[in-house]
Image (tube, rainbow, N blue to C red; front, side, top):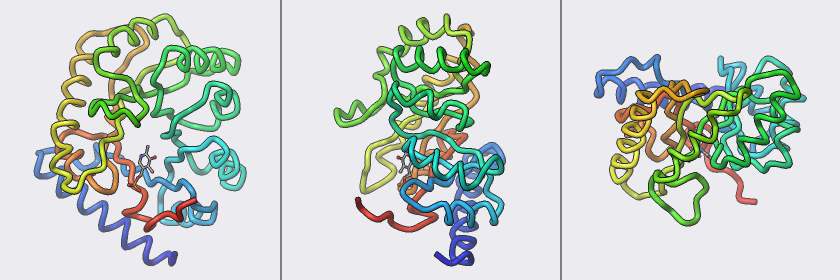
Length: 233
Ligand SMILES: *Cc1c(COP(=O)(O)O)cnc(C)c1O
């Protein structure tokens, strides 16, 4: 991809975010555009860096490791995909935020590794609000129990919630999902549980990020809308 094309795409997505924020009476600066560079080469990550991007989303541990090796400390990586417990140790100190924690067992492993490495891991809990069978994430009714269990882990900090909404033709159909996410987010924030500091709502992708911003997203994860269609593997 040409640098100019990526620059234009970034500008146009940022414009749409700003307009969606304005419609909701929100400050666009409260929304982080997280470009998703999964499947793309480190050269594309470098291009994004040249255009001022300092954080990107990836969904595979191996890709984070290889791109981190090329980019070094100058780019921050978010883990947005499903994380296997046996890979936590490889990636924990290579990412600034894990969006996809959906079990006590995974959180426990993250806590253990974080303790070993002497850090506090920042995590989001992935919710499957739409109750899609094919999706990762916990169901709403299991959230309270999970939160209670996480309170004993001293080396993690739960900073918010994440969801991958269904793929729909009309993004309006996902509004109720995003709205529900925000309700849950506010509920938890009012509870004041140990290790939990609700700040981040990671929701909205290429197809529906404008609706997500209108409903309160603080991180939108956009791949195709910036980089074009990914090669199917
Ligand atoms: C791939 C991916 C995205 C970006 O999807 P696009 O539709 O290309 O914007 C966002 N979030 C997660 C978890 C992903 O895996």
